[in-house]
Length: 364
Ligand code: SF4
Ligand code: SF4
Image (cartoon, rainbow, N blue to C red):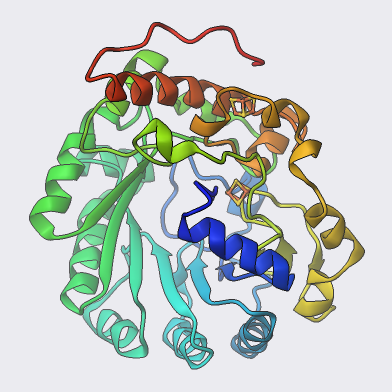
C-alpha cells in the first residue's frame, strides 16, 4: 500500500494515524492452510509443507487480538490466508470484528464458499471480498494445480455477490496468464464484479525467487499498461496526481499485520517480526523499541528513492525491497522497472497520445 497525494484519503488517514501513533488498518492471516497449490504463492516451501499443522491462533485468542486492535484505533480489518474458509470459526470471527466496528474485507480463493457460508458471512457483516481468479478455466487450474478450482472459485464469487457482498476478482499479471486478462475484464463486467490486476510478482517470503520467473517482459507490460480499462501499478492516471511522492509506506506506521501463529509484522509484505501476541499485548508490541525504531524512519532515510525523479510513478514496496534487493531503505529493482513503464505510459497519455521516448538510465 502506498500513499498518493496530500489530498488523498489514504494520505490524510496516514497522517492522522501517525499523529495518534496508532494503526488504522490491520491484516490478519488466519491460516496458511489452503486447498490450492498456486505456482506463484508467496509462502515459503517449508510453510507450504507444514500447511496442515500450523499453530494457529484460536478463536478466543483472535477475539482478544481484535479487541486490542480496536483499543489501538484500528478501523479496517482484512482477513487473509492461506484459505480463510478453512477456518470453521470464520463467521464468528467476522461477527466479533463487526462488534468492534471494523470494516471487514476478506481475501479468499472462494473455492470453499458454500451457499450457507456466503449467507452467514453476509449476515455477520462482511462488506467486501477479493477473490483470486487467474484467467480462463484452463489457465486458472494450471496455475492453482487443482483441476476444477476455477469453477469452484467462480461459484464462490457468485454466491458472495448474490448475498450482497461487493466482490472484486483479482490476479497478478504473469507470463502464465497475461493473454487472459481481457477475459477477466469481460467476466467481471458481465457478473457485476470489480476487478484488479497487479504486475508486481514478488519472491517468496524466505527470498526464494522462483515466482519472479513468472514476471512479464517490459514489452508485454507496456502494452497492458496502455489498456485504458486497466489501472495496474499506477497510483493515479495523470502526472498531476503525483504531486507529493514519498518513499515512506504505511507498514508499521498506520498499518499492522499478523501471521497465523500470532507473529506481528509491519506488513504482510514486510515480515520483520516485531513480537507475538501470545507473549505480549498488541499495544506493547506496537509501542516496543523495535517498532518505534522502524516508525521513526523519515523520507531522508530513503536517500536514493527520496531523490529519484521516478518516485511519483513508483509502486515501490518496502518489504519487497528488503526481500529481493537486501535493503528496506534502498531501491527495489522490480519497482524501478515498473516506475519507468508507468512514467512512459502516463506522461505519454497526458500528451494526447504522444508517447515518450524510452526512459533514461536509472539507479537499478
Ligand atoms: S511493505 Fe509494501 S505492501 Fe506493505 S505497506 Fe509498505 S509498500 Fe505497502
Ligand atoms: S524508481 Fe527505483 S530508485 Fe526510484 S523511487 Fe522507485 S525504487 Fe526508488
